[in-house]
Image 1 (cartoon, rainbow, N blue to C red):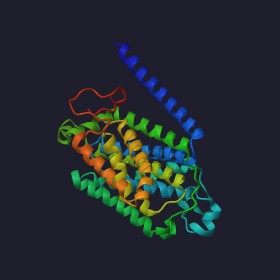
Image 2 (image 1 turned 60 degrees about the vertical axis):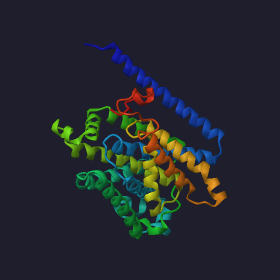
Image 3 (image 1 turned 30 degrees about the horizontal axis):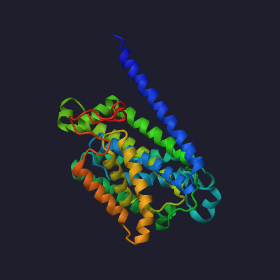
Image 4 (image 1 turned 30 degrees about the vertical axis):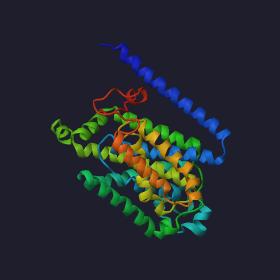
Length: 347
């Protein structure tokens, strides 16, 4: 029978989403015209990190895994996108004289969007290959294995000097990433995560998160859905890495190591794992805090102050509100409309 209330509910959710996106881009337009380049850079960087944290949330928040390899996938996307878009003249003269043909060869420079997508595809392929053996592990064994993947990718970037220039890194990367590219990709990422979570795949992922044995009894293949979440998350991590490369203008292997990994994990945990809005709130909080406290850190000469405050925030969150800022306790009252109506609540 035709359900009028369900139909209107869907229309209301879509209308609300369209209004929120319109308001977002209106605010971005105002920010891009009213604020300084430095503030616009920080706002753009927040958009890049939203792509990374929202994609990690699909794996860690909705599937119940605890992956620490996200920075490795970002590195793959960053180097792929940078190599494909690097100016041909600069590529031939002083940067990458031995670029292989499958990355464009010596006489081709890709447009930004195809290069960005290709970075995501390469990261997803790596996730699919590595995920088959790694995702059979559980708990801290999986965390250590995924962390090892990040270390392996960083080591390869250090040693493949003909391709990555080793520890010197790649400089003079075209700065294509702007506020529109960053938040356009962020909106697409959040939308894809929302659609996946509210599909049959998403329900299977949440079933695995809650009780893998019970999910298996119900006919769900845990490895299949874990691999799907891992691969989709890696694809968008590659996109985030490409955006990062084209906003910073230079990349080096150490930029995708432990600091970046744990920064993204903190964003997800603080904001609320297993919610749509949680990673967004966590990303804004962590990034703004870093740039607000940076002058204080330099003035006091206490380097590492920001990381210390991150650690304290994480400890306080885990002790006082382990479900995160936007999360809710299991069995508690229904979360806010943004959390609940868009499928972001834990269930």
